[in-house]
Structures are given as C-alpha cells and as structure tokens.
Image (cartoon, rainbow, N blue to C red; front, side, top):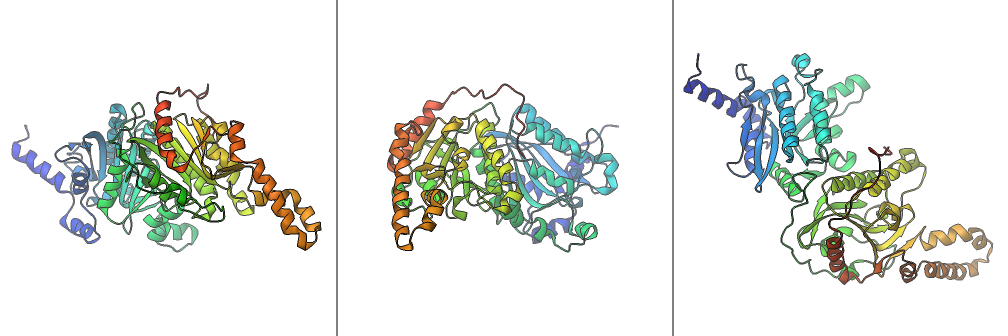
Length: 508
C-alpha cells in the first residue's frame, strides 16, 4: 500500500520534533539548544540537506534514532555533519544511530570535505548492545572510519553535553574539540562506575568536565562559555584549513599588522619574561591570530594566523609560563599541532625563546625523553615550509624541537637578541668551572664568573653564528614580518618528499 502524503508529513514532523517536550525543557533549563537549532546556527541558511531522517521511524519514541546527519555549507564551503539529539534517550546510540554516523563520515571522506561532530550523547544503549556494539558495522567502525579520515579531511567537534564511555573517542579522534563549560564532559566510566570499580568518589565535572579537559588533560582545545561560542570556534577553525589534504589553505585579504614595537616587547635579560602571544599578535595580520589550547601547557603558545593573507601555523615558547621550558604536555601539544599543519599544507612558523626541555626526576619518570623525541620526530617529518626565528634564545634540544638548522627549515632567522647554545651562560660557567669557583677566595668569585660569562657570550655571538652560516640572516624586529612573507612565498611549491618508507616508528 502506498504511503499517503499525510502519513509521510506526520512521520517527518515527528522526526524533526525530536523527543518529548519535557526533555526539550530540561535542556533549555541548562542553557542547551536543540540539535537542529545548533545546526541552523552553524551552517549557511537553507544549505542543510538531511540524510536518514526516517531512521527507526516505526519505533516508538526514537525520532531519527537520536542523531541528525547530512551535508551543508559553512561560509560557502561544503561540510558533512552529525548532531546527537539529546532529547531522544539522552542522545544515546542505537544500531541505526551508529550506521548513520558511519555513513556520514564515509561520505565526508569520499567527497573530501570536512566532518563536523556536534556531540551530546550518553553513549551506547546497553539494551541494544548486540545490535550496535560488536559487529562489522558496529560502534567500533565509527572510530576506524575517523582514523582513516584523519589527516585527509579536517574533523572538528563541538561538545555540548556528555560524551560517555566509548563515545568519548569521537572527540578524541577529532583535530580539535570545543567544550561548553558546565555542560560538556568526556569520560570512559561514569562517577558511579568509578566508585564501584576503584572506590574513588568523584563527580562527572571533577573527573571529565570541560575545564578539566581544557586545562589538565589536553583533550579539549577551546573552553567555551556558551554553545554559540563553541559553534563560532568550529567556524573559525575551519576558516584556516583547506577542505582536504590535497588543497591549500584558503587565502584572505592581507591586512597590516597591529602597531606594536616588537623590539621593545623582548627584554634583553633572559630572567625577564614576556608574553609571546603579544609578540605573535604584533607580527601577523591584525586580528588573525586564532589560538588553540590556550589553557593547557601554556609554556608553549600555538595557533593559526595569517601573514600577508596566507595561513601559517605558529608555535612560540612563552616565558610567562614556566619560563617557556618544554615539558611533557607542551611537547605533546606541539607534536599534534605540527602534524595537523603538515597534514593540511599549513606552513609552520617557530618563534623560539626556549631554555630547553625540563630536567629532573619527576619529568624523567613522566617520560620527558620519550615525549621530547615525539616532538622532534614530528618536526623532522613535517614537509611543509618551516621557518625558525630565534627571538631570544634557543638552548639545548630546544633548538632542535623548534625546527633549528638541522631540521631542514626554509630558513633560520635570528633577531639581534638571539642566542643559540647548548645552555645559557650562567649554567655553562657553573658546569665547567664549579670546582674552580669553589676554590677561589669569595672576594674573587664574582669577577671570575663575569669574565667567563663574557667569554662564553663572545663564543656564541650571533654575528659569528651568521658568519658560520648557522643562521641564514639576522634581521631587526621591524623587518621580520616582511622577511617572513617573502620567504614563505619563495617556498611555495617545494618538494615535500621526506623518506622512503611506509611510516616511522614514532615515540609515544
């Protein structure tokens, strides 16, 4: 029997309406929008084309099976997206939910367009586990498909509520995650499960809330106050990236830099900190710096920016936090960002003011060598144009991690304030002359140390290093921006072959 027009219209109306009104009201009380409202706020008006709207249409209380999927445009560029509907069984997954998610990721990969995840889900429906969990098109296939698409297309997640149990891996496999404070959470086991298994009493917010993940674990990238702010982060992030790995990042109209005296920003004394974020903002096109993971591992600042309208990925050591020393977390932060930029053809700019990697028993037990090797591996393997600017110092393996001369940068540029050495003068003099200093009369020690420091500084004089071709040039701060724009332009179209192999065995 043919489906009449009225029945079809009613089925569509039920699917679009989502769950019962009480669930809509409960979400609204928490400041949460309906899944379809989120989509409407994110994409270009009238551009959304939905797939699978009638999933589980004959079941009671499962409109669209709790997930909205389809294609749309954002700023005129095609994307695929999924949005959990938390008014339908708390956004939990059934078999059709899983199939819809897999299909839309497969479409994004096949058509080479970004994939956007708007997540708000309690995880799998335990009562339906046989249908959705173990099979070839079960929940695991979502993650397999995400990994296959990783680095081929941008994948970005906005997290508005929970992302529970196995579902927590959807955000984890994305390039970046925007989390709404107070509502968003990620966790493998609920607070009740944690207490049952380990005896620990905790809460979802304390264990896996947005602030925890954006400041401590590093799984979250943007801590947002509102859902609109999270959607804006998604839109901004995509504006710096191509649709896929075969394309170049979208250029924009060039803007002048802000009026900032870059030379005055950098203190001569290494003991005096300065904020690398201010330096970056004074160097790049005005208003273009888009910082990523601003609240985690703050000793390293990363983000996208534009130089003369062209996208670059920026990494800068920030001495305002932990002296700019590289720790385990900042090494991981750098590794992921370098890989992201290299995957999507974004040139890299390293602004070095690094004392090196942290030392001591605590970080050795955390695996600082392993994590540092991971960062250096990523920098080595990155074949996009790379430029290293030594703003103030590059000591020890910090020089290597910040794409120093041995790592095939297009150029190593030094500012007049730059110092490149195994370690700073104070540490070096102490290392070499500790016994001699201790043997001297106390009245003679300061003069002896000052003489040795002067000798050391002369040995690493930046003009000497330029004369030895360790650095390619020394430029004044006011000339740096123009120098970078010209050098990146000259590097376009470079050969990006790195090694004869399938892939490296990366330290983890």
